[in-house]
Image: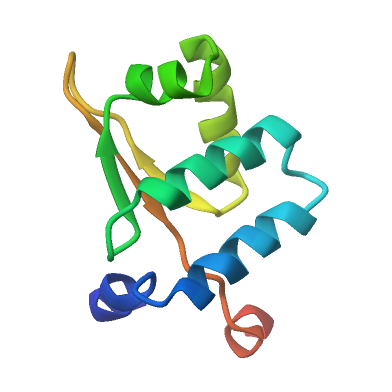
Length: 107
């Protein structure tokens, strides 16, 4: 995957909607993990990246940090996001991963 594709992936709201619909229909994504995915998708920049402290995201979601981390780990494991944990008291980087095309996923 090229860096250019990631850079322009979430400029169009249709791509973001398709990403959210895929997560919504996936039975492996818990209800709370979908809520987290929705919050992240709303807050990402044009490149599909969010740089924020997880404790701030947990505060907005109204949950304990451990609960949020469980949801982020699940989304990461399922291939919806890439999660790079920040150093002590530094923001983490969450990147929405594009949906693989059917041609690429068959290969």
